[in-house]
Length: 410
Image (cartoon, rainbow, N blue to C red):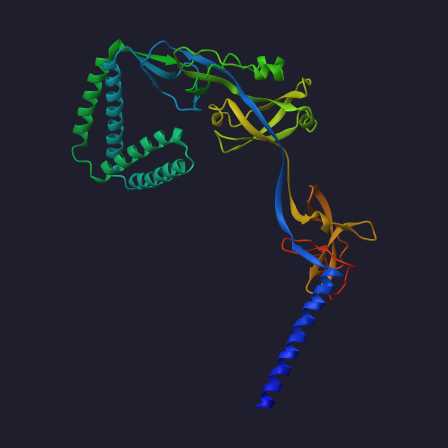
């Protein structure tokens, strides 16, 4: 009994010594010869300037004093010169008749499509594919909160579903129904008579339904002499009745006042990216077309673009980020960067129990980290090149005592 008790005490004592020795060695390494590491990973960063400015377009409001207006174009749609953009009605009865006429014409189109597809298997299969595509388009618009396009997509899907229904129900009596609809359409058209008037496009351009009063205030000509103080004083003019507006050409502008310090990183002709705070989820490529003279520590900057006009027709006063530069590389802590005896920049990485010096080229530096890419390596074999090339998930040394290439970890 006493022998067993003594053995237990001895085993416990030696276990205690082992644990104490382990923590003693680790504490010594940490305090006297600390070696800490962290993982390398791919990273993207940007140099940006926060701004508040205005979108400028060469646009003309389409005047109309009528109150009953039916728009014929969607937001951002291209319209040819002389083509209809809206219809005005002189009475409620005429407007109701026009809406009935539109519904009848839609039904006639569906019946004619069904008549041609009833005996055409390929056409029926195409309608199936169109229904699937329409459902996907509606779902995408909903997920992106794109309600402007949702109305048109829903109407198109409804029409396609009805076409498919008529096509699969057979062609019996379709001819009679088509003739009856054509008679109804003729009667409704005659009832409208001169109670409707079509408004046409005065020139070819991009249509927008929203007139905000800045159309004659912010123009490509007026922003050439605009100053930061003038930008602050901008106010829209009162808008009378209108049927929307047309935007001439494809070029649009963004003007904003930035600090002199921020303007130092910009130059005329420079390519950058505009990221709007709202209104569109696109990163808009633009170029710096003008940089004004300093005024009270601020400078007016004008950006221009000839892309994505249809996506910015509703933008006006807009907060945004100007992405001046972007960088992609491997992120390492700044204190991991070292220079070897040959004056080459690099990092020490732990591979197994050995430390290797891997050369790097610095792409970008912030206060606490760097973005780098693998540097040039004079390797004799592919295996050696792979060993000395920095990659994601490498274990880079951030602090250590004496360290050198090929050192074995203690």
